[in-house]
Length: 437
Image 1 (cartoon, one colour):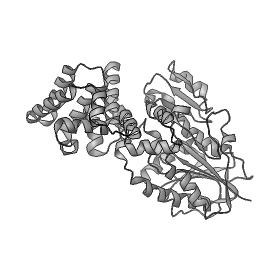
Image 2 (cartoon, one colour):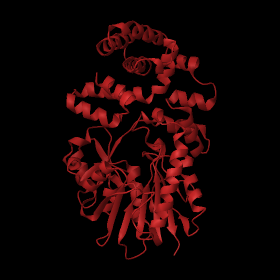
Image 3 (cartoon, helix red, strand yellow):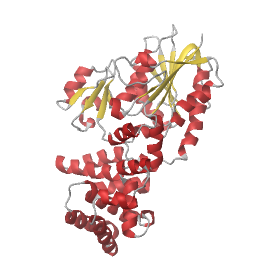
Image 4 (spheres, one colour):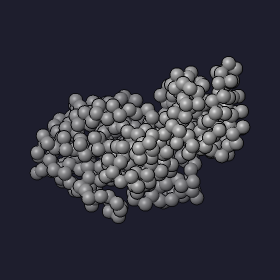
């Protein structure tokens, strides 16, 4: 029932599974075995949603989108069990029919029974042959549970190497990363508190990885803000800005799109005693989260980064973690791959360009801007940089790699693209732009 509630809420209400599911698991006090099964069923169903819909549509002889939302949710959950989990077919069908009866009424049980029995006649490989694309890229995307346009975007960023694309698509299971916030808790103390399932992150000196799972909300350090849940790639993006060569007598750093405050909290622990962090966000509720994260060294502000209230050339360092498609964090947000549309990319590109132009206007001579996105899409990364630098000759691209020592496979520079299958992080992109003195 919990998996059904999440899958339907994602479909109907636009909920985020990574926020809703942990909340329901805590509220309903499921056993560890039931919680593990529910988590796999929920995330797996959402991860494969578009592929499951193709199969459901063929078996039902009507598009999945034409079905009522409760029936669609039940069929997606049942199809995932039949095709991707070790659940006996009769058990998957019977439990799905019962779930349909409880949530949509007895009139739909015949449809649910017939569709799932039709799906159960063939295994996943056979269904791929029946309904999957015939071209190599399309077949690879379908086999991995991705929309074709997303796989194509990842392929472009990987230089068209289908072998590496296959590895990138297959590396799809999230591991929870924590950050020990400087000045509040040491990493060693956080490791001790997290227990035997925790290990140090290999790249950030503040990262802890929960390799055997577990709910970080049970840790006192997370509840009181001394530590937080933050992907190691996000930590590295903030560290690049903090480690970049300074300009002397620094008074202000700026986080332009700071909500919900993870990077701002890390930066607030890294700034010097005479420096303060201006942490802005457009949304008031996100700005409130930032305020709780940054402490006394931060100044939270509700502001539109495209029409900023701060003076030009008034800050020393700027972090622009720009709104993006989030294609770099699909393993953590499985529904996003099907929620995002290819048409979103150009709209976000225009916003990213507008924000980066304002970031460059904000920094004083000698200062530095870190442009960050959690997306490897070239339209959101290199194309943004080249577009903005074309009309800002006072800035130059600086090599990011020296600020990430010891990390392999960072490419030819000067920008850096991290990857889950290479680095175990989200696919974060980082570029540094330096104002010429």
